[in-house]
Length: 318
Picture (spheres, rainbow, N blue to C red):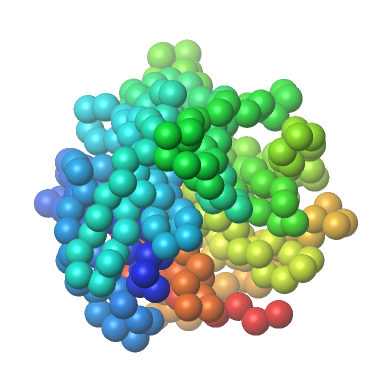
């Protein structure tokens, strides 16, 4: 889904699921356009409007009093449109932004300062390769002067979908993701990535220490835990179809929380995550929103083709 905060409320919109039958039973994916609002952490979700059209797998974030989102797609095509979405206490209002230079779905991104970044992704639903593009939109400019600017891609890094991003002390971080490629039969296959990179405007990219394992599609952006650490919640760590991958006997969706320490360029396990049978499941492809002193992961995927209606609210104290 697209998600962020506006007018002190949490907004979540769009998304896709298998509403009739599960994927493994031949179900068909359905795209949605409803917009939900949550007024307070102990409140109830309400439907307050609809997106311009059903859409999912775009990039979203919070800028000032609005949710900004770009790209996404449906079963037929991917989109390039971008919008600001605001809640005024009574209704949703949309403000159009310049469209992305190309259609993008399954990308990553976030707002850092006034700049909205969109990184990687997939040009069309059937694309056999990911995109090696990063675009930036300065929302702080007056509307007539806003335009997307392409930034360099990390040198030598694979193109990717479903990376995790983060921000720390003015740097933008890019973690993991999934590389797409055509196999010998022409089918699209996936390679799960462990590389990590940091970008600073005016200086470009620098390579960081590789992650101990892939954390593709983890709730994003990463949590800026304190002055020293970024936290990443779970993710997918093994290829589809492998014994330990999402489609294997042992799902590759993990609850492990990783900590990255930028000053030392090191990785460590922050926590293994709850293991009780009735605990909230691990989730991927979910937006992470800072809201009311918490970090909220809205819905997401808990197993291949299976979405969750739960919302994970995490209060992090140093």
